[in-house]
Image 1 (cartoon, each protein chain N blue to C red):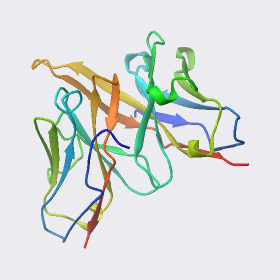
Image 2: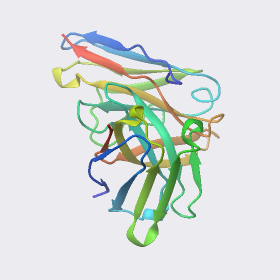
Image 3: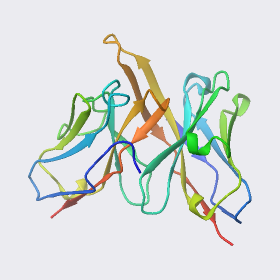
Image 4: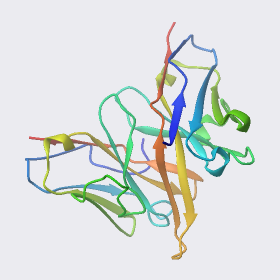
Length: 110
Length: 126
């Protein structure tokens, strides 16, 4: 059972904007920054968004992140077929003294 | 470039132990914490343990505290995960991950995992 809550699936058509949500608690998202990872089948996760809304070098500006209270969101605009993958949110948890993850959202591009 | 090179796949019997290695390159090894995160087939990501590579202090997720040992050898920039008492549900891909952490000017703790190894598959089978 993942500590952070994500919807297991999301979908959209090419060009559309989709949002993936992540819900936590005061000890994790409420107190610390949120990160998002993208994972393609058979590969390691890659950092997509860090510090709530910061994109590492090389990540297109179609990807954006936001946080409010104990929830966070990842938005993908101008959806492309290449965006079809799994997305995980994560944050440090003060109670557990370690990072916690969401259960992952599988994004399908229709 | 910054890389984490992990050891190869392992097949173990239930009750055995496995030791996985992670060799860092392209950066100052002792300047960053390293973590182990695992992913069972078809499942999500699960944090297991972390090590302060500078002083060797470790931290473990509660469910692994009795079975996991995490060590490092700074002379060869390598971290190790040893998992004992293997069970069938320990079958997973084990990722070595580097983190970045700092206290921001807003007093928030900024933490993210920026570099991931390719993963080591551990299969527990009789």
